[in-house]
Length: 386
Image (tube, rainbow, N blue to C red; front, side, top):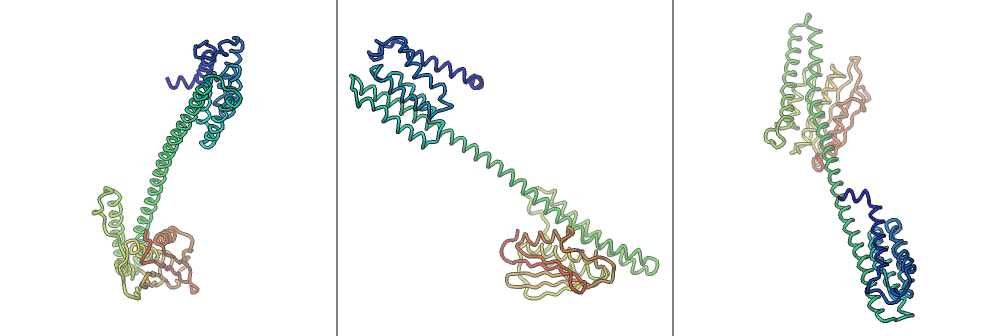
């Protein structure tokens, strides 16, 4: 029914205005005597004057309301009082619904005093009652229109809030998915890249020395096998975390932290080059995010040493300060023809920089004047850690 009415809104509106015009022409007993005594032609003219503008009340609401106020005033004397002033609340309703509230209030405040103007020059019997009726109907139409407009604004704003909330939830979900994908990619890279680089170097050493130095080749293969087992173990841990239920926090394995760096250095040292560890200052408790970042920076930096300077010695330094942990990894120049990593290339350096920046720290990765390479991360011990 509502859909049908919307499709035929114009036809229904014309029918309504036509019926209203016919009602104005009916010889009702409550009409003023002057109206009853006037001709049918004059009735037709006044009915058209008071109802015709209503056809345009939704297109030009303020103009139609003003025209009907003037038309009502113009018919006062010929009709001997207000007739057809029921058109005013119809026009006032359309005006108040269609315009802003301040405009509707000003239009209503102008129309109501204007309807009192005929009392300045004529006071026929029953004038006070007719004026009061016209005032009441006009005010009622305008007030209902303003109330309807307020209700429509409220529902429109409520729908906008719901739509904005849904959009915000979707954007937040997309952001969380992107962050989680980035975190998983970092973890997989950090877990795999270091040990695969070790495997690559050690299998190359074994291949080169297999015939001339079988014992050294055997040690290299043993180291490669240990790295492969470590990769499988750590990769299995990452996959187990991905498979587990989101609420099963207790199943998560503890992430590596600063306390695991000596083990990492010991594992790396002797695989074609020496790696030393220096610790300055008194060790402090670190948030999980800072400890994991420090561990991953050392791991990735040593991986780059394996890749780009396999014969160079490396030095890991941890410097503890009251509010900052500085992690640095440097390697000496290498006689190998390999090229050191550029400071702005490679997923390893990108991942390190993202990790460090996420904690509120600063990462420096640059070649040294003597041909070596430096990776240094300044990590805040207090503040943002995620």
